[in-house]
Image (cartoon, rainbow, N blue to C red; front, top):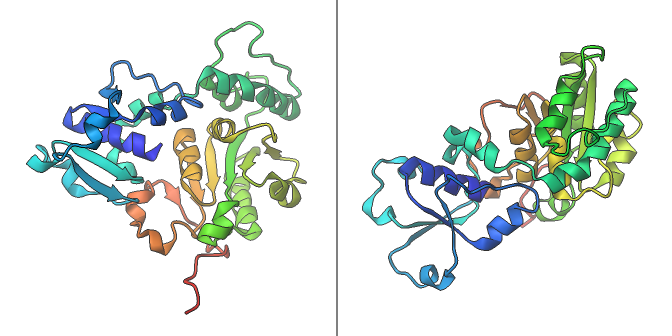
Length: 299
């Protein structure tokens, strides 16, 4: 998502063509519409034509915001430029946020799968029965989000907070972990700040979530049948977010909007990320986290 969004933002800035490998579009379309009409995006059909060219400038970025890519006109040797790596810096596409949000609109299959879960939450919170597909064959993500954040006037206003907890490979590869003290602090932070909060939690370790947070009456955990795209769509329904670590968390908050509370243990030092390049200014770090952080291996 970062790579595609960054490439799109640079193509729009310089009014140039963007060529994207087909597998990237195929992968993104498992969750999003990625409607390429009226965009500068072209699908690479003849891959060999680009693989063997010597006039393409290729440069790697993990999360570096290269200032020279914003010069107009671009340096002459950048007229054919290939993004290599991840380009996880929001500045590449921030000025085209509305267009990025339209490209990352959740597709109908994703919306259809998460809708029963949303209907169950509505029943649980408001004791109100609704069937979104009963009178409307085209239910969108905005349909669900609008109901949750702006319910009928007879129902009490609820503030929905999305929580993503990344564990899995981060425990072994990055050797970091988010503490329950941080999670409990962040949840209480929102409980005190907003009225009538409900917390929608997704994780790659749902047994961990159920063990540590599953007993709270204001917590909902996404079902085990949800894959990554479904969890992402569910979390994007929220009004505000609590994040732990990783770009998946980052995108749940970007798509949701609102305020964001983030743990302090990511990015890890060896990624060489400049904080201001990776985090938008509305991401908050108000808690002196006790979470496990990366440490260099013993010599």
